[in-house]
Length: 468
Image (cartoon, rainbow, N blue to C red):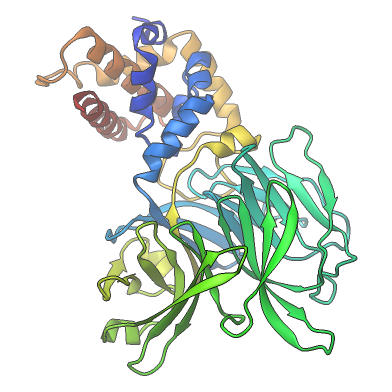
């Protein structure tokens, strides 16, 4: 039976609904099955549906800098303690995060390479795209943003000399996925010293900075960069923010948090921008309940979840690694110990955490990803690069992989399974699991046990979808 042809009879909305519930890495595998599946799973409709489903299961994303490499892990929000490893890159940790993507300023495509590349990557799937070279001697803070109207990612690089971005300086901006990507000039009307701290909210990039009065006195500001119009503004925050302030997304509004730790006296001061034009802020002060666990940890603010919980994370890896969820309305603090990958956690390294990370397929639409598997990646999940992808597509076209897959899954899905009745259900299950089996066999022909487990897990997802 030709599974590819048989899948034509499956309603498109059912097809997309099933696959929207799977992880992004799995979508990459399914795109290798046929040109038809590739087209459907690359469509904007599916990309939007996948994002909607993924938004219902946000995760904490962790970046760990260790021995010249960046490791990326994630853990389900809000109360799970499991830690899943996704990928690693040979790179210094100098990143900007936006909408599920990471900008790395220095990534070595191969360890022996002397020149590092600027890349945009997906920390979950391991996909990355190399950016065009910048002008020589241009180095400064970089900020990644997204234009929700035109659906374009943009990277802003501030040209700093002596740490100062002068009003007369020419800065650079790059629009991703714009065909032949080229850096363009952009100017900022005021002189300031940019800081690393940044947040993206609803089409606007905000980053912390320092400005100077005519007498040389410095004061803090938040620079606002409209990603669509590419215009700069700034918000004067003198008097309540300083260099260690954490910028957050508080229920769609810009927030700023100062975290104060002392002996048995842990406080958070949070300001929320209520009126952008008038620059009116609301101030909240929270005192944490006593906790010996908190007292023993070196913490930083990771961010605020969509439900309003403030998340604190340990700054460094540890055998006993914790994150804390603080509920301002109930004044409760819940510690959650994170388990998994002891080899990385036990060696003291800097940790960077991001809240509400959602898997998104925009990267596939916006960027021409050069690889699905970064060099020397160590992951237990199956990966396929583009050369493998081409070979898989050719073998699927002539049916040879399905024939091999049948040997493994024959009877597996239907033996004693009363819920698998009806032509439509059978067609969906066979098409989907046959696709997984085909791709999995192509890269690991001997891994029968793993294949059976994979088939079972996807069958359960499909059955659950059909029942709902």
